[in-house]
Image (cartoon, rainbow, N blue to C red):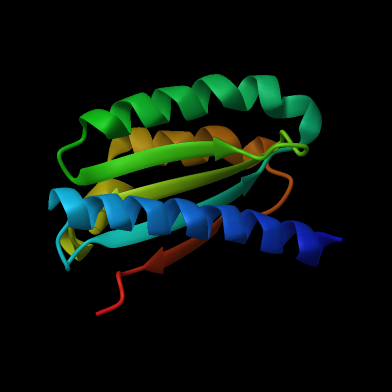
Length: 128
């Protein structure tokens, strides 16, 4: 079940990344240096009400961050305690700066005690 669930989450994230990349190609907002970070976050089910404000605040701050080309925080249908963060950073340097920002570190520190599993962060780049 966990593999199937993870595969479903990964498929949704891949679609979001592909859609985002397609839009970026059309608008020219992302460069070939862009880093795509997909972060799967599993919250203990009774703790979701605690996680939602932190995730919303993170998304709002990230949308104002000059290092961030785009950001989406997705909540899985049917497993509302599973979230996927799809972050597009302008470059590897922008990604490095982003993950060291206080609001990003604060999100991870806030969520750490209510996680159902470890953060699963995977970095990607557009295919050449």
